[in-house]
Image 1: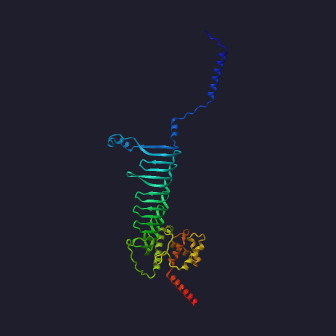
Image 2: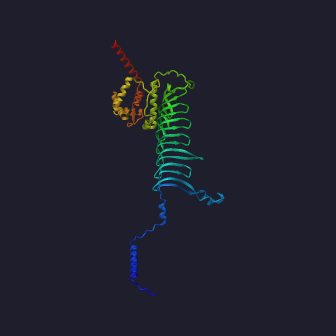
Image 3: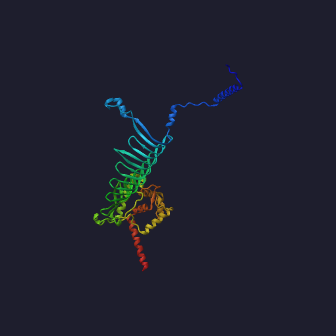
Length: 413
């Protein structure tokens, strides 16, 4: 039996034709999809950003290469071709360690702390594998993989360094605790003791003074605990060259009398001890200036001073003379900083009624061990005047003072 098409069949055929035509139009409007190779997809997945779990690095086993070359001469069994290398767990940015994370190297060394652009930067702690033990080496601030800022460093000898660090080296104030019990507290420069510092020895003796290139250099005092004596001296290459040895009177630090080996100092037999000491100081400082140059000599002993026969760090000037010197110095030190430039010393001398020539000023700066742009303190200036003062000047001053006293007595009468 043959079906006769009716109105409903015709309508169905028209709808089907319209749907087919619409499908063809839709396919033409859809853009063609670009092909992305698998290697590019995998490479994109390997880029690290954000917090990641532990990532492992592997490296080729050197024993494997030796086995392939020498066979059973190296091992009876073929070793693994690859072995574990470094590991890292933490934050990433642009495929670099950035943020907080923990890195463990194949050697066993470990760092935990802040990172920036793939380098240790910020605050963190580094442990070093020494033998079979993992020991803390440094904890503190970092910059570009180097110690930079405040931090504590433990060296292989067991000494402890608490200091400010610049590019991996101590600079500025700090403390150094030695394994033998001695302690240094003071200034550092380029990883060495340099400037003012105090070294307390394990036996209780103490040095207070200047340092240069890790040695005692310049003005300093060495206090002997057992004998209650003190040596105030000028130091060169870690040894005293000239100074005053006297009793150490410090009741606050005095312990039991049985612990001390005190003895009486003999009377000084020199006729003019101040002059002898001043000349010795002068020669020591000139020798330092010739050895290190003016710049380095100034750093070694920025404040040279003179000693009197009692062992104090004050020159043999009267109170009136000291007041005049201080007033002249203050007239040039308009900012009240307590120091003037070396080239301004000539102005201070003019305030005192002294008019040196250019040649004299060169010699004065040599005496100070300072360059024209270096800072010179009042104490250093007084020490200079004391070292340049001749015995005749002192005798004239004493005669003038005696004459003044007799005049005052006559006026009172």
